[in-house]
Amino acid sequence: MDLSAHDFMVPTKKICRPDDMTRWEKSKAYSDLIGFICAMNDSVRNKKLTDECSISDSMQKLLNMVDIMNSWVDEFPPIDQPQRFGNKAFKQFHEKLLQQCSTLLESSVDASYHRSIPEISAYLYDAFGNSTRIDYGTGHELSFIAFLCCLYKIGVLQENDATATVIKLFSAYLNLCRRLQKTYRMEPAGSHGVWSLDDFQFIPFLWGSSQLIDHKRITPSKFVEEDYYKTFHKDYMFLGCIQYICSVKTGPFAEHSNQLWNISGVPLWSKVNSGLLKMYKAEVLAKFPVVQHVLFGSLLTLEP
Image 1: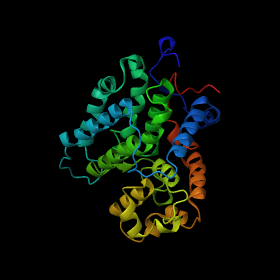
Image 2 (image 1 turned 30 degrees about the horizontal axis):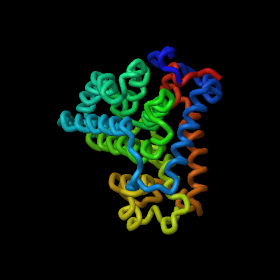
Image 3 (image 1 turned 45 degrees about the horizontal axis):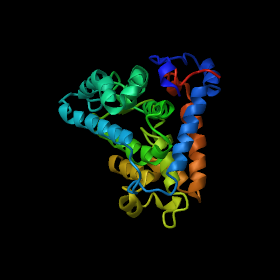
């Protein structure tokens, strides 16, 4: 992409009613996001989170950026309040994110990309939850995916950054989001509750199942066993998700995470992986309540 001639713009919402979903599903943005998700999925096949991988200067700066955001949580501890969920201290974190987002990106990407910041910062700002409702869900996760996709489109990240994008950068983002969810007792946004994979995330299950394809010991039936998820949660994103769910939910796994329990009956990780991609398209990308919040600019467009 020739950045010198490109007209960046602040992205806006354009899916206003359910009738607009057809435009979305035929758009360049939809195709770009699916292509990006699949490319990252392929890049971590058979790879552990703890594996060595090349970390470019650009990637390191982005990892530092997430570390800085993580430090803000310490600045705004939860406040004493009558209601149990939705701690209002999250609003302070979010306000700081709004104020610092552009400045953070200026120090995290090369000066030649600074013209893109008004556009890409909107996706980053939207990726950590809603400050009014104090909730987080797959729409916010999708915003971070859109942010990463834009970094590839403008050239901040290159093909050789793919593995690190998932096992380092997305992993750091996921850990920060979990910290926000726990610290501020965030509500699940538009959750399917027990009938979804998880109250908050989807992508780590998809990319995490790719990591486990052809694994000699860990078959899908094993991920519900405590020995397995406690031993391997630092190596595999999928098992990290299971470990996290079991740390925040009580009762029989089959009851609090019915969809995942069903997935443990699938014989092969490759089948789990392809099934989750189909499910993501149906349960996230085809749902108006999620897609109405997607932002469109010059990089992710609604053009057919």
